[in-house]
Every structure is written in structure tokens, then in C-alpha cells.
Length: 65
Image (cartoon, rainbow, N blue to C red):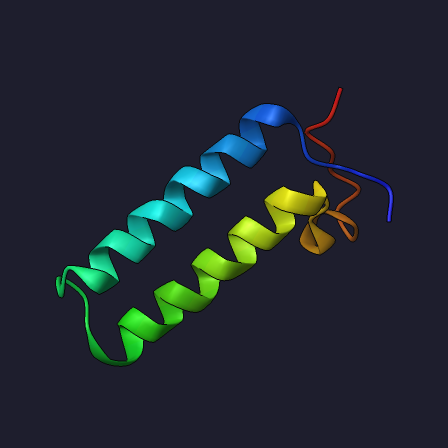
């Protein structure tokens, strides 16, 4: 896995993941949508940690300089 995410991309994903977690745990979003947001948040944090996004591969995208 060659890193394909830049620093700004990684920070934005972590901020969005924190927002999703806040919305779920504060009770603003509940039910199936809340669980979907939590799963997306975990995926965002995981991809940010390894600096690799598998969805970028088919489109040959990279935000890394």
C-alpha cells in the first residue's frame, strides 16, 4: 500500500470522524443513520492513520505531494 493521502486530507477526515461521533453520542443522530455515521467515522480514522484510501486507486487520485 503506497500512501496516497496528504496531510490536509487526513486532518479533514479525522475532523469529520469526530463530528460523526459527536452527533451519534450526543443523541442528535440515532438509529441506522447513527450507526452508518459511526462506521464511516471508523473508516475515516483508519484510512487517515495509514495514509491510504482504497477508493483513490481506481481513479488514480493522490492528495499526497
